[in-house]
Structure formats: structure tokens, C-alpha cells
Length: 220
Image 1 (cartoon, rainbow, N blue to C red):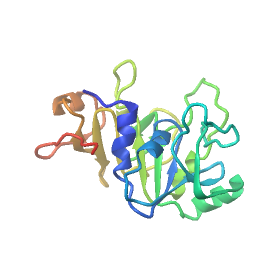
Image 2: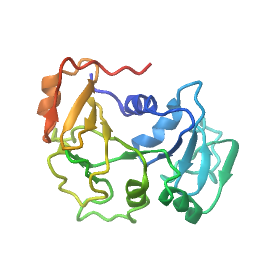
Image 3: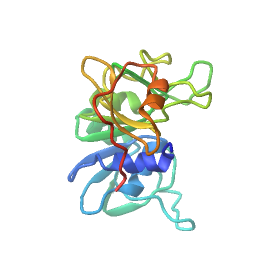
């Protein structure tokens, strides 16, 4: 079975290491805050000006003044710090963030990412994604492998306006975990439970490298 958005976030949370400063992008990445493994100490950074995000609040406990970059209500933790967006982007551009987790509309086999604009549709702006992909030490993309029409979103080349070039190294989708090779191509590392390698091949337009037995994704 393909993973849900929550399960994608839960799998990505396993990539977070103790001591990391982590930026969560809009969409599926914000769900990662709910699945931080026990026993590790990290700091979540939101580009609108916050260090120390906690999980989403329970219904009825929301504070409308506490929001993330996607305008979702959040919680803070002891030691949290709130500041302006200029300082936030100073942190990002100075490479103080260890890991960035972003959503995407398309990713290419060379590690290009398109996640800010669909031509013909109005957008409020590019947000902070271009700064993040230009500055982050490590970027993981959380996205859907195929769109509602069943078409692949992992491509030889992105068809939408690019956010960044050759900057993505790992992708986690509802079907698989994939590395992006330095010489180009998606390397299949794990597959969702019950999803066959052949189905992943059919769902990936970009070059897919499969070596040996591919284990199923584990969430625990």
C-alpha cells in the first residue's frame, strides 16, 4: 500500500539526527514536527521567524499568534525564540540550518526542484524556497510520486519553473525512498509496504537505478 502524507513525514523524521537545526517547508514537511524520534534533541526553524517549534496544537488549544511559514498554528517549546524574517533568512543564508525538508511539484533525476509556481496560476510569491535550496547543507524532498492523473512527478527534466538546480539528494514519496546520484538518476533505496519495484519503475519517468533486493520502508 502507498504511504499516506503522515507516513511520508514519519519516515523522513528518521533522517533527523541529534543536535540538528531543521527547517520544515510548507505542506507534508510541516507534519514531520509530529514525529520527531524520542531521545534526540533538535531545534525546528520556521522561516517566518521562529526557533523551537513544537508539534501542532490540540484542537481548542491553538494560539492564532503562533504560526509557521504555511500559516498553520503551532506550539513553542521551552527556550523557543521569536524574531523577524530578516534574522531568519540570515540564519538560512549563513548555512546555520543542518537539514531542510521541502515539498515539491517536480524533481528531476539531476536533483533539480520545482516547487513554487505553476504557469497560469496566481501565486503570492516564491516564499523562502529559493534561499533554502541555495543555502541548505542537506535537503530532503517530501512529495507525491505521481499526480492525480497517475503521471510521474520524478522526471528526466522538470517542466515547471525551477526553484533550484542540482540541489536535492534524497526524495521520500508515498511509494519509495530514493537517493539522487551525483551523475544523475534516482537510486531506489526502499519501497512502501506491498508496492512492487516494477510499479515504482512504471511510476518514475526519470532514470531509476535498482540494485539488489529493495527492502520495505520501516516507520519504527
